[in-house]
Image (cartoon, rainbow, N blue to C red; front, side, top):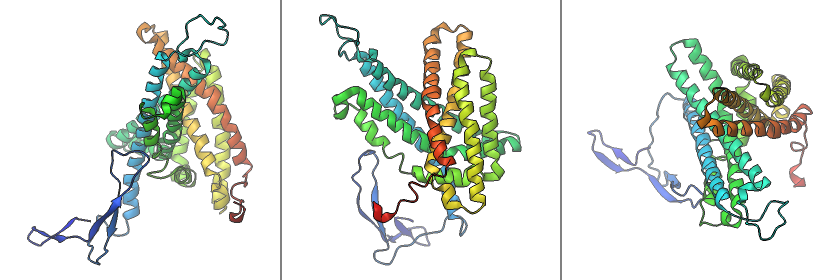
Length: 370
């Protein structure tokens, strides 16, 4: 859709009938301009076909799938920025004393020493570093799908990336936004003001659960298309990778309590997946996809749990090597993995119960009842 039409000799012709109708005034992402364009108000708009006729949707999804990975990584970076800022603030901001500190003359402690602040920081760390790991893993899969010498290996990388793309986009967009919310909370009233950057990180990140496909669209794509695609090749591959990580974790006694919740979640999720795919194969599409958003959340937690277990294994290996300079880094990874796998993952069984029951409390709600 050119701005100017081009004459046969290559010179510029008249301006095309494309008009800037206005600018969108957005909540965030104000550094990028979003506009409304009108096409053909005067009946003289000319556009050209790119590619083959009737292939537009396929071309769009090639672009969209790559863009979804970029959106997920953008959400990670905004979540990470908020986490790091709130971490530094918590280390420097003195406020109050510990619950057992009854001496009014004692100095105040930095807020990072308060248990609930540590909870919020650890939650952020688990969300942003787990999502970052997944984003980097997806980037490697994309490279592998293009550069591996073996055709079968390239196909496997493509299948797995196809399956994970809705998670790479949606999980960071939801949970790194929650990390931004916690960063604001840690700063208290300061976090609500424009003197500090965390409110902008939240506003900017709020777009990511919306554009390049909302959570609802990603959930339909995951359950309705991706898990059964190519006879479930990507899903089988992912299951094998998670099982392999769990087997390797058995070599580290400290990881038993982390490995077991993931194993239980994946086993139950596999059963639910087969049941829901059965519904879809029997033509019960509306019922099978009614609670796809819950499925997306559980599937995402299983994937992030897997990535955290992989990080925990590497951390244990690093500590075993005696890398003293990185000891705190490794222990921080282990603590974040412990948090996610023992605090976050077990909570997914409520969503799984709703999925198993084909709960219709939302889908059966009538328009007139709202």
